[in-house]
Image (cartoon, rainbow, N blue to C red; front, side, top):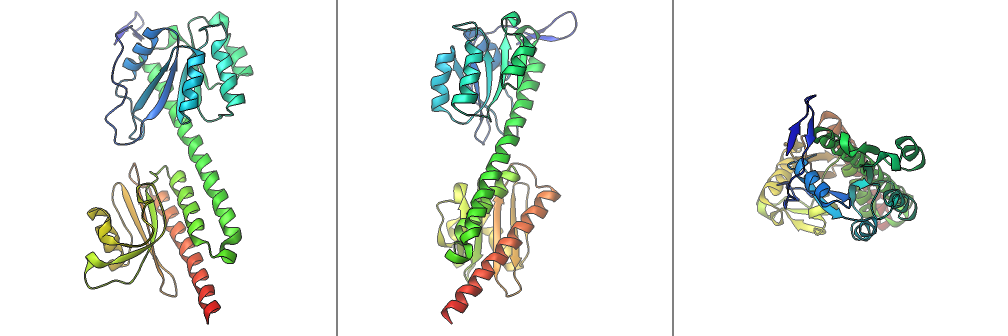
Length: 324
């Protein structure tokens, strides 16, 4: 609930604590940790952010009423995206000590931390910003509903970008490691898995993706088989040779269409990329997305499939020569 002051700003008004913590999103929510020794601050924050959504994901609120309780919760949740943190709790510097613990002891550089204080004199803004690794500093009296919403939105965008870069870095390291041994060990599966991770992180995709090859098309589409080279997310249980009929009917139809028409196809939340090498080796990439694919997204996916297909063809030729 909010009310307007004389300047037309919607100042937050205390209200009863909301029991709803999750939006009706089909994706995993962003985890937001509220750390404040005043219960009413938790209630009004939950109410002010009711219905919040970013990239199809709502919010999951986690409450701590002391810095000590927050430490315990941080040990249980390593994927907290944002912390709204009070400065003065069990001690005058409890909040700042918690920041030090998060950044230095937990070595967590990704979670976004926004300090909220009702006693700015206890922790001057300039001193806090220069000495502590925080991402924003707000006095509770200035934090209107609109400003709170904006703060949370921009903080989560920043967290999302940082995590995408980190996942991309981890994926690239995996690709480099696999690439160093790809010809020696014929380890295309590890190579493809690493590139899948890199691609999904770079495009802000779900982790649902798979790289596949047709295993020889039969007369009946329901009997067609695929060779799963690498898979993530909901497809990670599929390995080796799998019948197309084992997949959801929509997924199976999309893959079958791409193979039969020898062309890529896409919709609002999926992309099937088809590529065939000069020697006739076919390969497909199936990915799902939260939003509609953009032209740069499509170009990146096509380049990915082309590069991995060429690498697979090279290994296949080496294997063939080995057994000749």
